[in-house]
Length: 305
Image (cartoon, rainbow, N blue to C red):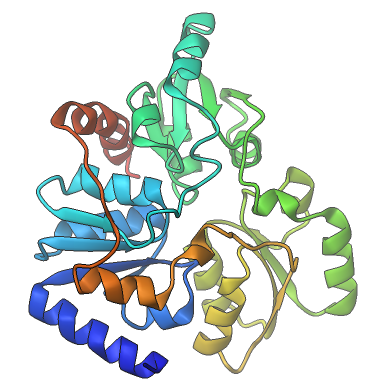
């Protein structure tokens, strides 16, 4: 089958079977074209909750599919590629956080959305890259333990100096690969380009940017800006997506190594197998886990996340 033939079969089957397909922004463009919604992980979760579809396919990584299940427990949720995990989400476990809570009883634990459902059960509030500053600022607590990404946490800490934010040594192995040397080389090669980066990048990279924000924030900035050239400091698939959305502008990858191998596991063939009922992994979570993991998400929503 050609790409087009596979896409047409996916579109036919998802209509016939009442399936909603979610594609994270880091997925390839052929998957974008068959998705019902494309975006950041929590935005996709909210779209799935509003959909009438009884089955949801997440083209992303496991923690994203878990979050979809938490907000739509009545739906069948499939992870398109069962092997697609997130190293950052798996860096900490529940027992470690419980130990930290005993050690720091006066700290409130803020968990990045990029964490497992099990870990969320022992956290107080959840944040996304686009809402982190707003949520941390809105919280009445002054002492915050921010987990697991120290780079995102450092970016938040700079913007919310009135809070006492403690960080742990964790983060995204994809974004942490980006170096200051690559920033300098990209600036030299494209002196008229604006540098847009994700705050999961190292602090010394983020502070040198013209804009730092979530993946969808980066794309929105580039689409709406009057500038004609951009250096993109997040997963390299975004360069191609922006080139297709804004063909009159130029986009350059900040680092050739900023590639999420877990996101790249999902293929159009995986999606086809899912809509055929022959692939994917069903996300199973009991009611207690959903209830306990949702508390920190519900608190984020209460603060306007």
